[in-house]
Length: 427
Image (cartoon, rainbow, N blue to C red; front, side, top):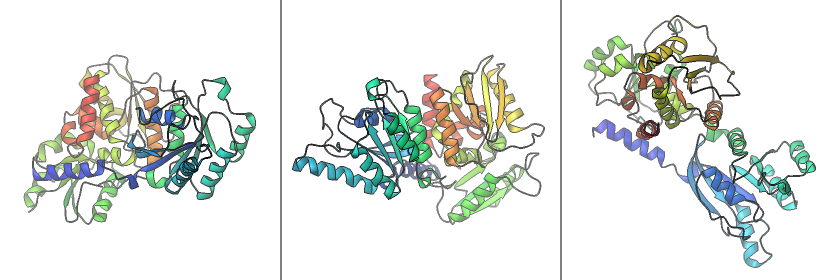
C-alpha cells in the first residue's frame, strides 16, 4: 500500500472507532417489564440485551455502541426498572438508573401504556436538565397497552414527543427513528468538516474546479468554497486549478498532493490525469459524507445496475435554480444512466423543499450534494427512503459509478466501497 493511501486508511480507521464520549448517548428509562430491552433490541436490529418476562431482568445499565442509520454513531444504554423492589439493592439499582441522566443526550421514556408518578418524575427531571425526551408507548399491538386520552393530552400540552411502537411487529419504529433525528442535539447532527480525517497540517490539497455553464459568473459554487475554507482551517495548503491544467500543475509541485478533489462532472477526465497513487474523490462525495451517510449512498449506487425499462428514478435537488442546457440532474445523469443500462428509465425531478410523501413507485433516489441543506434534512430524506425500501445515492457517488471509477473515488473511504460491493452482491 502506498504511503498516501495507507495514511488515508489509517485516518478513516480512527474515525470509525468513535469514542463513547463522541457518540449520541440514548438512555432508556421506564418501569420493569415496560419493554425497554425489547425496544432497544428492535432499534439496534440485534439482541443487545436479554429479554425476559421476569421483572428486573436488567439489573445494571447495559451499554451498546453501534451505528444507527442514518443518525451515525450512538451509544444505547438500557437501565434497570425504576420500580425495583424496595430493598437496599433495589434502591441502589434505581439510583444508578437515575444517574444516567447526567450523561444522557436523548432520553426515551418507555411505558406499556400506564403513566404514573414514576414516568412523570423522570420526565420532569429530564426537562429540567434540558434533555430532549421521547415517550415510547410499547406493545401498541395490544389494546390493553393503549395510553389514556388524558395522558396523551398531558404530553401534547407539554410539547413532549410520543410514539406508539411494537417491538415484535416493528410498527411505529419508523416514527421513533424520525423522532430521534428530530430531537437529537444539533451538536451530533451538525455537519462534520468537509475534509475531516483526510488531511493534516501542511498537507497539499489539489482542488479541480471546472468552469462550465452551471458555474455562477464571477464566483465559485458553494462546495468549492467550503473545501478551500476547510483546507485553511486544517492548516493545510490548497492549489486550485481547472481540469485542463492538471498535468502542468502536478509537474510544478515539489510534493504530490495528499488528496485531489474534483467536480463530479469532470471525474472521467480527471481520473486519467491524476496518478493512481494520489487519492482522488469529488466535492459531491465529500458532501455525501458531510451531510448524510456515505455508506448508504455507496450502497444505493449499486441499484443503478438493476434499472430496467419502466424503472423510475427521482432526481432530488436541494436548491431551486433555472436549468441550463446539459443540466447535470435533468440531462447528464439521465443520459449516462440510459447509456450504461440500455434501458428506457423514467426520471422525475423535484427541487427545494419538495419531496414526495410516497415513494412506492420509485426505484432509486439520486440526490444532489445538498450544500444548502443541513444534515438533519438530508438524514430525514435518507430515512424515508430506507423505510420505503428505496435505494438512496447522491450525484457524486452515482457519477463515479457511471464512469466506472467508484472504487478509486471511494479509495479514502474503504468501508463505503465495501457497502457498495455488498449491495451489488445482494442484487
